[in-house]
Length: 351
Image 1 (cartoon, rainbow, N blue to C red):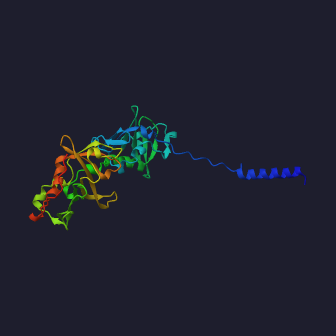
Image 2: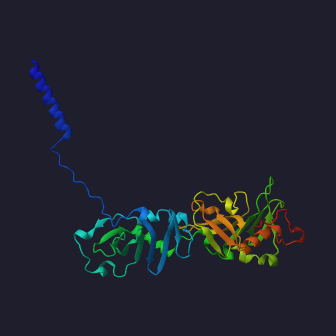
Image 3: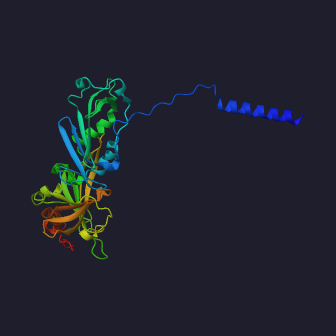
């Protein structure tokens, strides 16, 4: 076989391989279009959020980067575990289906529940811009809601779960645990710690319910729980539920250094434990631990931070009378027997 024939056979083999690999006769699969965007804005552009769901309403704003607070209660940062992801969610949801091709204009908003929408959300943006949208009735299968961007005629379908998350903001606002007002009947335990004194570990007073009765134990000197004098301890009932006033000095402390407010890891602390319930209805013991700091210059508050808000890092101001009454429990515990009165060696911190 001469060389020309060899080259010809090689070219034929290569061509056949290319045809098999590429297969130009195979039908091209049509690319499925991505779901359209209901609306889309930049995460960093969002600076205020207002949510109205049925008869409930709540609003938030961003006073500085990475910091969000309620409008009311003013200046209170939302609970991180509930708030995380909300701004990203509001940057723009993708829709299941775009009806604009067949419903360029919504002739009858009532047909979709958009004449009296269940959910209205106003999103404030930088440069004095804003966008609002409304969710109407659910679809027949209950998986989606009809939706519309205010001022535009197009009709969209939005996943019901998206609207449920936003609606819950108004129905059950993400108030942080340390700001929630509780009843005395909800409290199960209170711990007071006046801080370490030099090389010696500070005393801790634990007050808790035991078989329906309140008992206490100073962990530094008591071997077991001791009953409290019911009449004397009754004076402390209003204080056991937590501070009557919580103000926010700084909603987010970026560097997590609290020394300028006198707050230290081994400094004074007050813990309140209470019964909590999960979203599935399971009961558990929850609590708030305040790490206490210096007294404010006006003498009306003590600086503090909540250990349960390790992400938010808010610096708080707690009512001074409440704080000092709680400290006094360790200094002069109202035990039921006279000999059990404890005058500890720790002294009450002062501002």
